[in-house]
Image: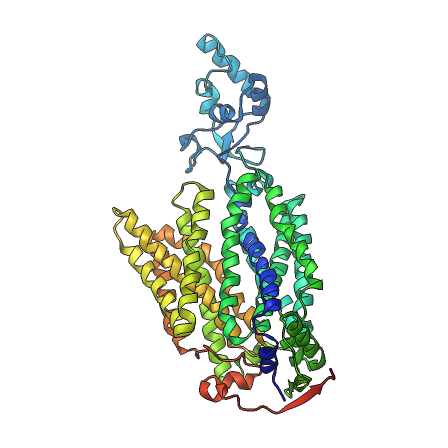
Length: 563
C-alpha cells in the first residue's frame, strides 16, 4: 500500500495549497522576532536620569526649570568626591532636608548679594553637602518612554532590565518542555492556535502591567506561548511538503524572522511610548487565530497517531486544491505499526544514532545562541543611532539565507553547517587579536563572523527537524532548541563579565565554542534528499543512507477509505 510520501507526491509536494499554508505560517516568524528582540526597544535607557532632592520638584516648579535645567542645577556632578565612592552623579542625591534648599538659597543670597533661579546651583552652599544613595523619586529626561523609566530600572535596579530578558528566555525553555511536548501528543495546529491566543493575552497584560512583578510574570508567559507558536509553525510547514522542498521552507521561514528584526526598529521609532510598542508587536498574534479555518492538522502527525482515515481526507483536499487527482489506488494509506507512545527524553538517547544526534544538536543550539547573541550585543556597544544600527544588523543576516539556499542542496546540509561554524569561530578569534588602530578591519571580520553564525543558526533548525522521526520531531526539536534559550541567558553574562577582565576575552570563548561545534557537526549523518524518518528505526538506518533511500518496507497496517 502507498506510503504517506507516495500519496503526497501524487497530491502535490509543494502545490498551491502548501504554498498558501507556508506563507501564512511564515508570518509567525515576524511576530516571534518582535518578541525575541523587543527588550532592546522596550528598555531604551533615558538620555538623563537623576534623583530629586526632598523639595527639588517644588524648587524646579517655582523657578520654571525644564527637565534639562533641573538636571544641570540640582543633580550632583559626575565623579563627586563627597560620595566617597565612584559615582557619575545619577544614582545619589544631596543629604539635605526639605527646608534646607530654601535656607541654603537664602544664605547664598546673603553671601553673594542675591541669587536668582537662573544661577547655577554650584553657587549654593548645599553643593558641599554629603551624598546619599537615592531611595526613589527618580526624574527622567527622554523622548521615548520605556520600562526603565516606568519601573525605575536604574542604578542598583539596573540588573532588573537584564532579568526581564532572562525571564523571557526561561519562558522559551518552559514552552519547549510543555507546549511543544503537547503538540506531539494532541496535535500541531490546536497547540499553535492556543499559543497564539496566549501570546496575545499575556502581551496585552504586559503592556498594562501595574507593577514590575506583574510585568515579569506575564513576560514569562509570553515566552512560553511564543515558543509554542514558533516551533509548532516550523514543524507544520516541514511536515506538509516533500523532502525536496524542505530546504526551501526551512530557510525561508527564518528569513521572515530576519524581516521581523528589520521591521521592529521602524515600529519603535514611530511609537514614543513603550506600551504602544508592546501592543503593536502583540496584537497581530490574534489574527493567526483565523488559521483555524485555512490550515489543517498535519497529516503526517495524524498517521503516527493511527488516524490514517483523517490523514487521507486531508491529502485528498490538498490534491483537489493543487489541481491533482488521487485515483482509487490511493484510497488506502500505510499507517505505521509502531506502538504510539508519549515522547520522553529517554527516547532521544536510547539508541546509538539518536543519542549521538541529540547530544551534538544540543551543543550546536547552545553555541549558536551564545555566539549569535554575543556578537549582536557586542556590535551594539559601539554606540551610534540605535534604530539605524539595529536595522543594519538585520540586513546583514539576509545574505546568509541566500548562501544557504545556493549550497545546501548541492553539497548537502552537513558541510555548510560545519563551515559556517568554523568561519564564525575563526572570525571571532582573529578579531580578538586585531590591533585597535584599524577599526574598519575589525568591523569587517566581525561582520563575517556574524554572517557565519547566522547561517549556522538557520541550518540547525533544518537539520534538527530532519534527524528526528515524526513521533518525536516536535518534542526533539523543542528540547534541543531549549539549549538555545539557555544560551540566551548565558550570553550577556559571558560578554559583560568576561569583558571586565579583558575586553576581547568573550570573543575568544565564542571562537572556541564555534570552532568545536564545526568539528562535531561533521559527525552527523547527511540528510540531503532523504525522506523524513517516520520511526526511530528509520533514524538508526541513516548511518547507512543507501539502505534507507531504497525504502526497505516496514511492518505496517492499512487504513482504507472509499472514494
